[in-house]
Length: 257
Length: 257
Image (cartoon, rainbow over all chains, first blue to last red; front, side, top):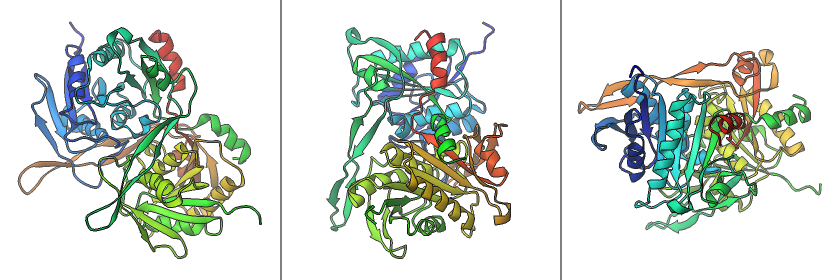
C-alpha cells in the first residue's frame, strides 16, 4: 500500500467517557489512524461556544484500547481547534463527532455541541460529520448507528466531500428489522418552546430551570424529522455560509439596497 | 394613535453594563416600549450556547433611565428565551442585540453571542438584528453605529421582515466624513487560525490560551469584510436553515441517495 493511512479525528459533546464516543471509535476501527480529542465533561447545548476568557487544559488519557486519546476542559469546538494545533500539528483527513446520546435533527443543529465540532472542522476545510442517535439512554443500543457510521465514513473516505460542507446524520431508535436505510433530507423547520421551571433557593431567591417542548412546524416529506419518524437515518448536508440568499433579493428590492 | 406601541427586546453578549448596549438602548428610544434582558457578565464567544445543566438567575436591575431592565446569569440565547417566558409573557415585536464591541462579520456569525441572541429570536419568529462595531475599545465612538441602528430599526418597524430571517449589521470604525452608508452583503468566506499559547501553571501543569489570527479567504467584492474595509456598514441577511441546498444535488448524485 503506497497510500497514506488517513487520520481520523474523533470528538463529541457528551464527554470522552460516554458510551456514544466509544461506539463511534469502534465503528471506524481499521479505516485509518484514529485520534480522540474530546471534552472531559458533558457539553450538551454548548452550540458553537469557544473558550476565550479562560485557559484550557489538555491531557493525554487512556480510554480506548490502542487509540491515542486526549481530554480537554473546553467545548467541542475548542477540542477541534486544540487537536489541530497541539495534538496533530496538521489538519486531519476527517473529523467525526458523536455518537450523540439524543437526536440533533432540525433546529438542534444550532444548539448542538456535537454539530459545532463538525462545523468547526468544516470551517477549517476538514471533511466532517456529526452522528446522533435518537435515544438518550446511557444503555442505548448503538448497533444500527455503528453500521450507519461505517457506511457514511467509507463513502467519505472513498471520495472527497465538497469543501466546507458537513454532514448531520441522525439515527432512529428502531430494531434492525424496522430500519429503512439512509435518507438525504433537509433540516425541518422547528423550534423549542421553553417554559422555565421557577423555584426558590434555600435563601428565598428565585431561580429557573430551562424546560423545553419541541415543536415541529414543518409538514414537508423531505425533512430529517419526517425521515426519522419513518425509521430512516437522516443525512442533512450543512453549510457554514449562513447568508440568506433567498431573502437577499427581498432586501435589495424592499429596502432599496 | 390607535396603533399599539411595539415592544422592543434588547440584549447583548458583552453584558448589561457594557457601553454598547447603552448606545443601542439610546439609539431606539421613542420607537417603542423598550425592555432589556441581558447577561450579567461578558459572554463573548458563546456561540449559540444554551444553559441546560444548571439553573438560571434573572433579576430586575436599574441600569437605563426609564427602561425596564433585567440581568440574567445565562447566555444571550438564554436571555431571549427567558425574556419571552418570564418577563414579557409574549413575543416582542422586535429583538435587537448589541451593539457589540468588535466586529461579527463573516464566519464570526457562528461564534458570536450577539448574533446567537438575534438567531434565537428569529427561530421564534421575532424580527431581529444584531449590531456590531468594528472597535473593541470600551471608549469606542458609537455615534455612527447609533445612526445605523436607528435607520435599520425604523425600516424593520415600517415593514415586516420575511419570517425566520435575521440581520447581521456591522459598522466600520470610521469618521462621519468617511462613512459610506449601508451595504447589502453576503457573509465572507473566512476562518480563524488558532495558535494556542502554551504555558505552565505554578504547579508545573500545562495550560493553553486560545490566540486566533483572522484569515479572509474570500476575494469577492460583495462580502461584508470588503464592505467594512471600504467604509460601509455591512448588512447580511442570515438564515436559520443551515441545509446546504447547493451540495444536496451533489450528494444525491454521487452517493446515490
